[in-house]
Image 1 (tube, rainbow, N blue to C red):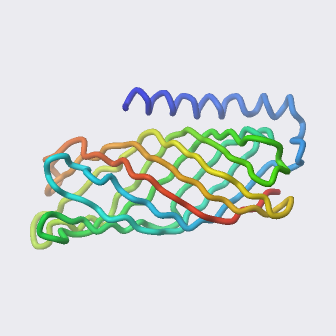
Image 2: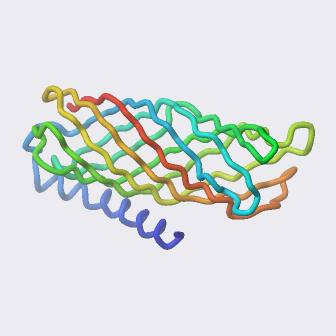
Length: 209
């Protein structure tokens, strides 16, 4: 998956480099809209088996997310997406709750939106790179602090915009984040490559201008 992450990161950077020339060639989009913003309520569900063989699981959580997209054309965009607040996850083992941990992802993606800007339904797909901040680890009460490094890697997006007016639209999207984290006990690494591969489902409202 590391090679896939590097490929997607390269693709995102390439889209950013190509964007200025595309902007110069196309002085305006057909719709006249260059930017869009979206606010969503998003469920993030962590990997159901982050440490194979350890029988540990983490619950999902809902938090607000925000995105801002620069539309190079009506079909091609560059999106910055992230959580406006932390997702809180309860960590469970065979004997019940072990503790809690927070996650807060941010991602940069290239997107392709299908169809004309004024279509009622506009599906889109995206590929990019995410960095997820891990904090608030409380999984060893009374003992040495257990910390997790911040996972980073590829992110894939699928979604659909539903136009309400030329400015306002509703959005539903799903994202898959790929990454791994190392676990540290009292500052020393004791477990490497814990899987961080959550998926998200979001519903929100956006505006184009």
